[in-house]
Amino acid sequence: MERHRLLSELKKSGPGKVGVVLFALLITVSIYVVFTYPPDFGPIRWSNPAVWADNPKAAPPAWIHLFSDTRPAEHQVFETTSPVHAPSGETHDLEYVFQIPFTHQADEPPTFLSFALARAVYHLRPPVVTVLLERPDGEEFTLYREILRGPRPGESPPYQRHFTEPLRVLLSAERRAVEAVAGFLKGLEDPVPPQEQWQRNLTAALFGSPASPEAFGVLSGDYNLVVRVMVNDPADSVEKVRAVVGGSVFGALGTDILGRDLAEGLLFGLPVALLIGLTASLINTLVGTSLGLVSGYLGGVADVIIQRAADIVSNIPLLPLLIFMVFILGPNLWIIILILVAFSWPGLTIMVRTMVLQLRSGSEVEAAQALGASRTRIIFRHIFPHTAPFVFAQLVFFTPSAILAEAGLSFLGLGDPSIPTWGQILEHGFRTGAVFLGYWWWVIPPGLLIVLTAITFMFLALGMEPVVNPRLRRARSWRLWR
Image 1 (cartoon, helix red, strand yellow):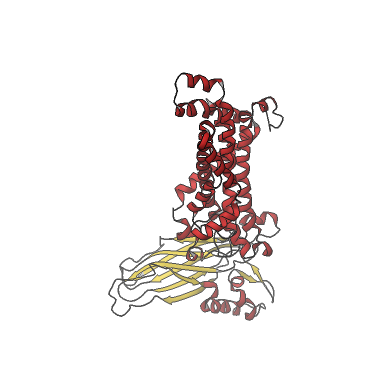
Image 2 (cartoon, helix red, strand yellow):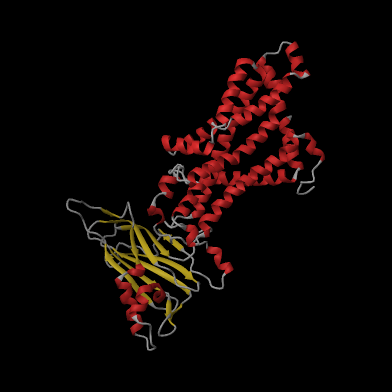
């Protein structure tokens, strides 16, 4: 019945409706992350530099061009496992051809161009890899040509190459790419920028045409990166080819200084924050409520012991204690939750005890005692239901406090390093000077998410106030709508 009262009051109040909608959104996103992210996302992906090697470093979000007169180059990644041409078995046609078409429409050239080749197998002689760039104006540049590593001493066929780590080549820094651009410019009649100038920014020449003797203009349109792999046996194979057209902007929330996608880290931090907040709050509420019920109803020695323990624990400052305990025991997520629970129950215990003292002398409890009801039945059937709305409100209030406590520890560098959290992302940003360098996308989103989560539970608590204090039901001037 109390549960139905809570839901009814939440539906009636504006803050309650907002809180329910926001909480449902947080839960939905958290469920999506739990089912789509690997459980070991922290050590396997987030903390693995190889995963983010192709990403731009400290790049702002892609949507910032909406507030600018120029369109920056957006980071693009392409991957294919299907060649447009494969060996047919004839000796004169032993070639794999992969094509990666892409469009460049920005007002600036890409920051870099790279390609990667993975899982190559050969039986006789190593394949020859050639990479070409076809431009919208019909020009074709040979950017790279290399032979894969030959057999090692004692190695027997088939020979496997780049199964663990792909072959990565920065095409915009290759000597052959410089020679290709130089040959192209040499055939032009108009004056062209000197090689010393465009060689420092080779992508400006690869993705542009001379606009003046001093600069290149951006050549927009459809490009095609062609990867040719000449093999020597029809049984040879190449499984995957990847191309990266580097940009100055990236994704929905940009990247950090290591190239990590901040949107991925922030999404993963949401279920972690809810896990910390709800777990710590639930256990703390169970402990505090149980001790308050026992202390208030039994009285005597039990009451004295519980209240003196509550007085001692409540006077210990939590944050310095958290810092000390995490420093001694190690930065583990469950240790942080355990410490939060161990030193956060006294306030609820004292309040519940006060309510139980009033209820113990009431007619309902006296009638139950006269009928011979046991202490356990009286506590859970005749006393606890009257305290339940208040207890549930305290559970909601404590959740953001636990989330903020963990974020504060992570910001101080004492969080669990194996699990990315919002506090850790903030701490890494401040430690590397993101605030002073103007990397706002690294600092503002995690801060806003922490605030949004706290506001969600604040709205839920405001919506439940009329249940805790019935006098508020007559005054709903704070409602957002009727």
